[in-house]
Image (cartoon, rainbow, N blue to C red; front, side, top):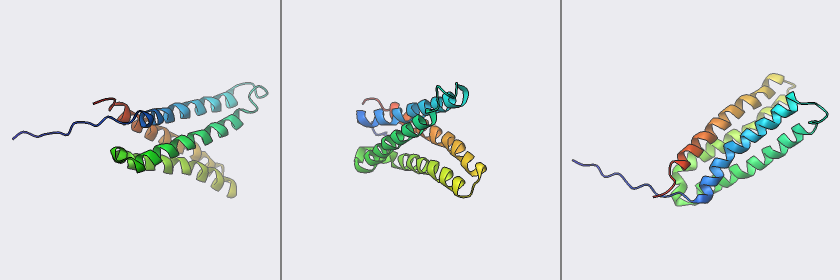
Length: 135
């Protein structure tokens, strides 16, 4: 008995570009954190502002990934990963705001731990899409 495996469908270029850009943008954001922490404080006094601004831009890209995965039938297999990515992104704000409200540095530190999960999820999603370059 032979098994017939379905031929992979090429993913839209815009979706692949979006998914690959998320971990790259997160890497850039982490670089800004490093500059803010380890560089001359005067030179990088706005490092945290750049970090926040880039974080907002990452949110826009993640929303586009989620919208594409939700609306385009060929991208339905990526809906769960896109939803997880969006949920982890939202938790970035939950940890910060909850930590401020409760005056807890430990809860705010979950922002960094959650960033690891966000990065791992974005890398896995990007890897899945890059592996499907063409049919």
